[in-house]
Structures are given as C-alpha cells and as structure tokens.
Image (cartoon, rainbow, N blue to C red; front, side):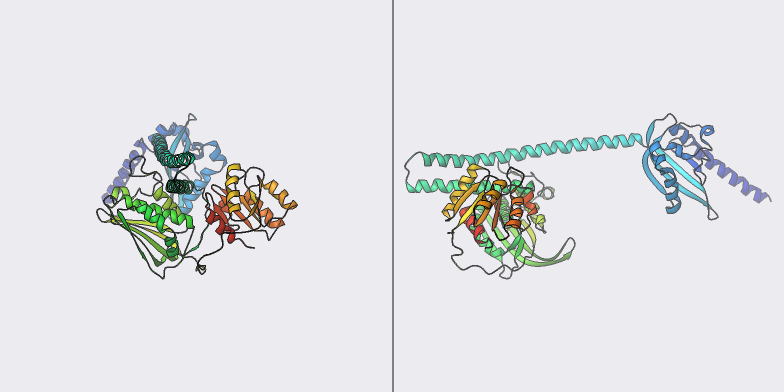
Length: 506
C-alpha cells in the first residue's frame, strides 16, 4: 500500500514538474486544444507572445490567432485536419496578437491520442519575426551585391567589346583611307582589301558571340560532316593558333555526322582554339579530335559525337575551373578578352541538345569536350566545282535599310539576277500581284504590320511554289522558323548567298 502511494506521489510530482516547466517557458507558446480547436491550457510564453492572459483565452477557439483572410479561407480547420490525417502540421505564417499587431510565427500542431481516440492537439508557436526580418535584409543585401556584380560584369563586357571593335574599325578605316588616297600598287591594294575582309569577319564573329549570349541568334540545325567542316575552316583555325602553336587533328574516318548549327559550331571551335593558344604563351600543340560515343544516362541518352580540343598549356587552377563558363568571366587582362568565348561554347552546346565538359591539370594542359547529338547521314558531297555561282531570273528583294539593300542588290546582280527592291512586306505583296518573280529574298525584321516571317507564311498561302529565302542578323522571331524556310545570316558573303539560292526548291 505504501509502495503504491509512493508511486502515485512520484507520478503527481512528475506531472506537476512537467506542468510547471511548460507553463514557465517564455519563448514558446505551448498550449493544448480539444478536438474542436478550443484552447484548454495556456503558458506564460503564450501570454508574452500573443498578449492574452489565461483567463482571457481559455475556452476560446484558437482561430482568433489567425488573420481575417486566413479565417475566411478556412485555414485553422484545415491545419487541424492535416495534423489529424498526417500526424503533424507545420508551417510559417502571419498571426495576430491581442492588440491587433501581426507577427511572423513558426507553428507546429501534433494530434494527441488516448487509447486510440483523439483527445486534442498540442500546439507550439514561436515568434520568429526578427529572424525573418534579418533573413529578408540578408536577401536584399545579396540581391544588391548580385546587381553590383552584374554591373561590374557589364562594364567589363562593354569595355572589352568596345576595345575589340575599335581595333577592327581602325583596320577598316585605315585601309579605306589608303584605298581612297589615289593610285596604289596592286600589292598595297590587295593588302588593304584583305585587311578589311579579315576585320569584317572578326567583327561578325564577335557580334555572333553577343547574339548567342543574348539568345537573339537564329539557329539552323542540320546534319554536318565534321571532318568536312574542319577542312573548310582549316585556314581560319590555323590563323587562330598563330605561328608558335602547332595544330593537329585526330578525327577518325567513321565519325558520325553531328546535328547542329554550322556557324555556331565553327565559332565554338575557334573560341576553344584561341583559348588554347592563350594558355600556351611559349608555344605547344592544339589537337582537335572527334569520336563516337553512346550515352545512356539522363539527361543525355543516345548517339553522340565527342569533339575534343586539347592543349599542352598551363592548365586551369581548380578555383577558376568552376567559373570558366560564366558570362563575362575572364582571366585575361583588360582589352584581351570579353569573357564571352567560353559562355558561347556552353550556350551553343546546350542549345544543340548536348553539353560541354572540361578536364584540366596544372602544367599538363586542358581538354574541352563538346558532346553533340548524332545527325542523320549527310548527303553525298557534290562533285568538284559545285553549283554554279551564276544565276538568272528576277528576285524580289524586301529590305528596309537602303544601305544594306544597295549591297544586297550588288551581290545579287553579280550572281546574274535582275533585282526589284521594296522596303516592306505590304509593298512586296503588291509587287507580286502586279509582276511575277522567280524568288523572294526578304529580311526578317522590318517596319510595318508584317515582318519577313509573316510575309513568307502569307506568300506560301497565295503562291505555294514560290521559293523564299530569309535573312537576319538579329531576330526573336527567327527561332520560330525551325526549318519552315531557309535562313541566311547577316553578314553574308557572295558565295554564301549563291549557295543558299542554289538550295532553294524550284
């Protein structure tokens, strides 16, 4: 009997101690609810946080702590339902004190069962307003820092681009001045023309990088024979590595075609070759290789071609390796790089449905690997001589810029075509109604209610068999063409224009 009394006393003391502990906790509102949500116990933490004394709150429904909006949306009842069904309810949100002020609360509700029957809920509430405000301030500071870094990066970009373009403009303007001075010997004239051509190509490549980064570049994926493409740009790659670096190739005869945009691929390879050259100030070897791989892991699965660009240079430090594909990031001094080269490679590879990887060791060189999806087998190569660069017939040129139109007319006339030019899509439709043409060559971006792509779709409706060639240097809508019409990129050379016309369906 004495033992049983002792046990009851110990149990009473234990419950009393626990009750005193709960009631004395000041930083947490710890209280009980009955199954309906009526408050049945209250502690000093609840009074401190929410402002109610036990006499004011006991017997009241806990929904009075919620905002009017939450009550109207049934949130209190939903919280008890979730706690009952899932065994726990936890959230953060606004709650209301007795004086009507709001605080940000961390809330936990646990169901309490006795002999398998729900007898109520245990509820814990913390006031974490100060912590939330601190977090919001930290996020605001981080956003401000990110914006500052963005402006720094844009400053670096504009400085690098301005430097590069000023150099190109200097070459062009100086060469033109030499040509305009009067009679020159043939060698000087040829050097000036060659310098202008080189500067123009470099300017076009830099603009291409900017457009790719800005996602404003049209993409024209097609099956490309990689070995054939490398042979076509071998001279450009040789110029890119310079005289102190040797360019080697390891491309097997059985390499599959790749499905990608030819111009973007060439730009990416040139960027990687130039980066490799800069990593070898004392000379070395750059090796371009390609081999077939079959991947079976998400997100890449299927047949791919792995294109490697390997150098024997300094290697990339580990703290730099994770940043190399970030836009504007460069380790080169001011005026020596824009930080767009590797970001163009990264954007191109992913836009083509592949990826790019890098492996590097200090003092042992670097290998960049571009993985591109396999394309359908390319058609047989044309016999030597290819399509004739001379054409015949009448072309309707749709171009709003008179200076660009003048150049395009000159190129088309050199190819043997008679040219009629209009400045917008509406004028083009009127011209076609009056006079027949053999094909239409239209810019995509132009003023008026219709752009070049809309014109092309309209012409396909009213003149289904009329060949249409589109041109663009920048266009959001070009991404929507997706093979419906051939696209020629600005700036283009006469052989590119001729080849594009030759491929038009007749």
